[in-house]
Image (cartoon, rainbow, N blue to C red; front, side):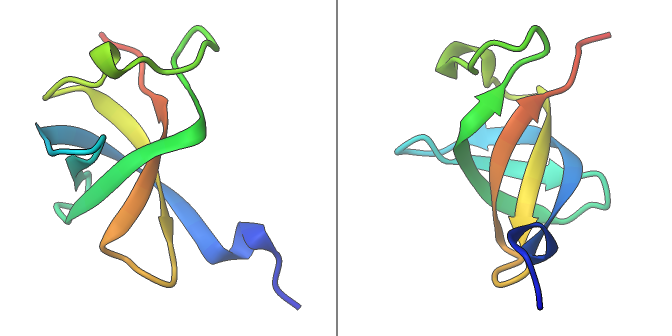
Length: 82
């Protein structure tokens, strides 16, 4: 029996472009480019909810990708800036 945790995996990536309707083009660390939206449970580095102003081009993020569709994902957290 599979659980919900078996149906997705997390990868790191960089926001390349902001699309319409809160969608983003994200390049994963492995070079694959996907379309991602913001998960309702997404948080920034300090543990607060992510604001749209924090999601700018070049920002590092963690994306959950579902195994059902490898072209789409959800931004679940931000990665701390160096």
